[in-house]
Length: 380
Image 1 (tube, rainbow, N blue to C red):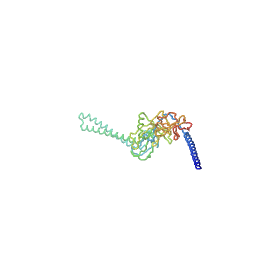
Image 2: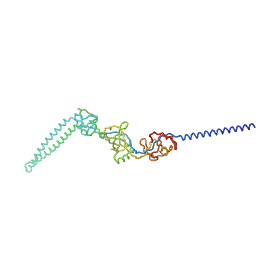
Image 3: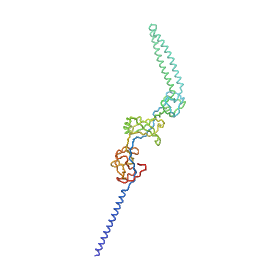
Image 4: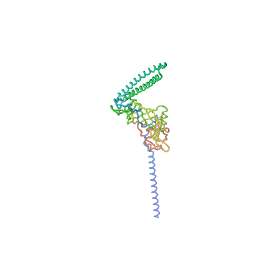
């Protein structure tokens, strides 16, 4: 009897302990679920920005090299002693301005000699023609032998040829005298002078006396990837393509120019094509050899919907954003994107003007997740 009572008492203790454990488990489970549920509904702090509508221009930026519009290596066309330099290095010169003068005395003497020979032979030609004309009238009467007449005619022909040769010598001597003064063939800026007064300069020396670069206007050469070529050609067929050259460390100086040349061959090594633009360069801000940033328009998108690029996420089904609705809940919204320009992306579909897209904090979001806005005061 005692054993039976003990067994009943032990069984009751086991049952009571089990019930106690069950109650504790249920209380803990309920507390945990309440805790998790509460944490799941905890709002996420996010930053949003409104979808805006504006005109967007797609541009192409690349590095260009400034080149002289024209460059001339000035050389002597006659040999002689350099007698005068008529400009300073780096000076602006105009076409036909005097640059150098070679000692002209030998050329002046040659010209005088050539003119004297011409005058002498002209006098002899006039006398020969007079004799020929007299013989021509006498031979008809038989007063002059045929051989004498023929000789008179030959003398006229020979002296006429001599006079023509003398005239050519005079022109050649005059040309050499003119070449003793070297003039600028273009408008431009002079470079370094490589010869000094008193030196002998030779005709067409390999080293030029000076190089003149035309920098008003001036050219900027740059390359673009070949896949841009069809669009550039399409734009060019509609009219002029205006572009910009950005100068300076902060690219704050802007020069306006125009696309003027597209090379006829694509570089197969780099897959690029060479283009050239012309700039008026009235302030001489562009200089040969300088590197500049070239900005060329490619396409315009009027009234485009635009969002910050950082708002766009990529998922298995494509691009999407989170939009905050009027109830301060995050909504998953698939979008179709267009071009990206700077830190903005064009939205082709999926959003409307004024929609508040999440730009910061979206990594902690899920559909219908409550949010708290942490927007700057000037954010729409």
